[in-house]
Amino acid sequence: LASRAFHPEDSVIMVGDLAIGGEKIHVMAGPCAVESREQLLEAARQVKAAGATILRGGAYKPRTSPYSFQGLEEEGLKLLAEARELTGLKVVTEVMDVRTLPLVAEYADILQIGARNMQNFFLLREVARVDKPVLLKRGLSCTIEEWLMAAEYIMSGGNHRVILCERGIRTFENYTRNTLDLTAVPVVKYLSHLPVVVDPSHGIGKWRFVPTMARAAVAAGADGLLIEVHPNPAEALCDGPQSLTPENFAHMMKELRGVARAV
Ligand code: PEP
Ligand code: MN
Image (cartoon, rainbow, N blue to C red; front, side, top):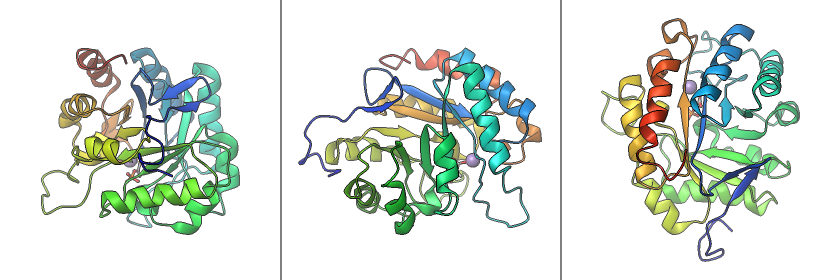
């Protein structure tokens, strides 16, 4: 079902009135984690002003250490809903397990499946039964074939609204957090009709290189971007080193207009 042989035309996935995979490049931006009302509303206001159409923010965080900040959970979801009310931005947020899926689905416009859950087949089967678009991140060590098969789980379960997200893969290189595999963009577009979004923030892990690779992603044919933006990255509870300040984000958006069909 994910294959281009099955569906020769590019798929356009509607998120309310936004068309992902259409003429416009959609930028999903916001903090890694929802930390507080002030932090989220400030980030939302700033990314909206710079031209983002979708607000990101995790209420449930898949952290490497159990002692790290794990997210505000339902309170975070409520803050995302408040930010949507105030700005008109759509909301993408991660769902980590089947237990919290009904709650997350109540608040999210797009359900994010994180890299660590890309092959959680029970979770994929469950999001297949929800009437919401799904942002499916590529697993840390997953091939393109495995990633498309994960999409197939969601689609064969009845949910055809899958957006793929390249977020970097594990390689021997360790100057960057991951290796952003931009080759995946044209390859996936050749193999599949699904829209592809690129997340250079997690792909690189260092904010300084994010705008350049965002431009490269769009030049490679990405339909959208996922960018971490924090009002004060130095104080972020999660992923500060890869987060752009609102000023840097606005500058990135301006530069993108030179490359993109429309941002
Ligand atoms: C995130 O988007 O904050 C996240 C945890 O991403 P990934 O699953 O790609 O690591
Ligand atoms: Mn993050």
